[in-house]
Length: 206
Image (cartoon, helix red, strand yellow):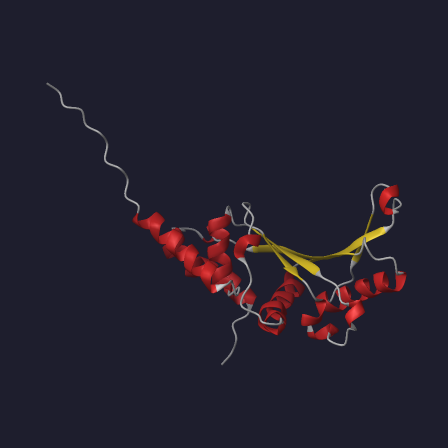
């Protein structure tokens, strides 16, 4: 059975959501704009490990990771202006969709005791940020030694107008949210639909 790609689902968002969201035009349906993958290295003192993070992040995303330097010097933390504090990659188009397909269908299911991801990372502007503790869930970096394992964050930027719309959109894309959270979201949506407007108070006219 062929797996439907994230791009195909993204393109079909209007047809899938118009009944429940009340869309009348394809432009109203949410779309993914870009994806940002980042990892902090501010606490690392070993230059080899800092270079390794940049190398592995490039392997995972398929695009060279850009270095983020400290904007100011902080003597307390022994950080000088310009010192690397992290690496970031911004993906669009084919690379973005390829990464999401691998993340959802390959990497996340490899997480130990995986029971789904939290929907709490959806912000009021309709974007979603997912924290990943170990980079080794990606097959490209499975040979990592324990001392070299690092975490990363994935931020998915969409055109969704609010948290509820984004949640419906991510559900359509097949994001494996925790079942308990999914059930709670369904209950809230049902309550909204079932909520009847209060009848206007009519005063008796003598």
